[in-house]
Length: 219
Image (cartoon, rainbow, N blue to C red; front, side, top):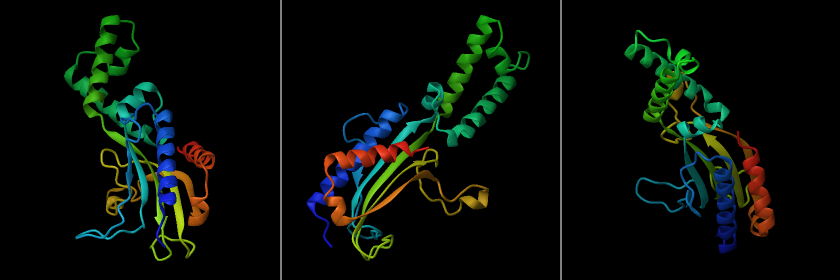
């Protein structure tokens, strides 16, 4: 099947609406401009690349861990990373200031000058350690013979998720279990397969409703 311009138009509108919802939901995202972070999914074979879909659009929005932490809205699956950074900051403070109270004792103490110095140290440490996490979504065209096709007929697969591969954004890292981690670096429950003809018939209101549903199910 050749996916039509109507399929492509709806897929782009949906990917854009999901991206806009993600941006509204997380102020730590780097992209703010219209359409930024939405790209076509490559579907043409070339040297060194074999497409696994028949096209569509994908969303990839990097977000600052430090910004999310400062705003108090860090995604819960990433809190352990911030905790590690804070512990590292406390150890570095003690190494550099062996005669002082611990970092958190200073931050919580009554000495205004010492508290300001400790807060500035912690903030600078986190800024220097800052990395990004990623919000992602896909609106993929899958023809009957595409590998991921579920129905044996042309379909559109939609998902939205948090990517936890800090700084890189890889969805799957096959060697990660050898180091005690998980190969799958995605967290998200929204997955939906729609027949291609039904997807092409969706109006703008239906596409917006799908985008809202996808964003609501993000962690």
